[in-house]
Image (cartoon, rainbow, N blue to C red):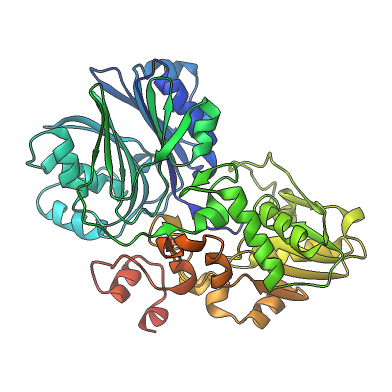
Length: 472
Ligand code: SF4
């Protein structure tokens, strides 16, 4: 499907005899945040061991692998690659042994100065194993002259910029870190006497842990046998929580940035109905991404909500197109229209975003082919016009349909009767007083964290924009 992709999910636990098994379950709940690779590192107090591979969590681990990951502390990771291509060396956790001892790292986010740091480290003789920006942190850690593990971790992360929610594991401690802007979520919880950290609270629900609070932006939380120690080593910075977590990435049963995702998403749908009404007979969500917003839209507009598209949940990443001659399956493999709901109806089709527009067009055609009289596309966030540099996989600006087309042109391209988006004000009003704490760069093209080189060069280097677009 034509969606933006969250880069990663992280999980960590300290002080539980079933640490690796619980991490496996936690990753299972976070699978939506990354499907390319999965990994777990565990410590038995003497040694940190790691296991990681390409694929879904359920494919990567079996009881034998988990039994090998002995110990009462563990961290885990699911990955969808953005920085560094998709291959096993980029899978996490990354485990190294250095003069500070063993350390494993899991990272959700993207470092904007990784390239500069990496070039400097390579000049000084560092040898990198992967293309991932996360490895830079480990090199900085290994080279740190700070005395003590906590101090060396603080020293290394003080040199990186951008988005990072981290879970680190040494022989005797779990360390959770969130960048000073708080781009990506990271929650802290308790399970009996154990401490748990996770990208989303849905991972805590699955293992029966209780949410305590968020790891604060700029906080380094060290969990060891001595208890929990909170360090705040960074100068205060403007908050920039990723608003797209609420729009699309996070699971609706999670709380992120202190808010229920389901509540926010439903409210986005209500706002959308107020701002962009349509004379229609049914509201139909694009499953699963548009369901919460469609419920809000239906509730506010009084138009009945019907599941006019059914999703096949069993299409995995390994789905192989049968053969060239019958490749026109396309989106039909994932979605099927319900003719009895759509035939002869004026349909409001609700989704959370349009990226390139190609999938949306196929869905509009599918709804029409099932007999819909009119199709009015309603999107529960503003037009996505600019790439993300903080841990979300976005295509080049030139490929984002809203960056290069007017609403009328998008309507024509999608072959819809009308297309309308929620306004930025409509989006921000759902998070109310907290509005200034959110990043919204993919809707505005204004970035809250400066790039180390001038922006045009950075964007060019990141291969996100075409030359002529950068110059503009
Ligand atoms: S640019 Fe968009 S997707 Fe990226 S962190 Fe900001 S709000 Fe999230």
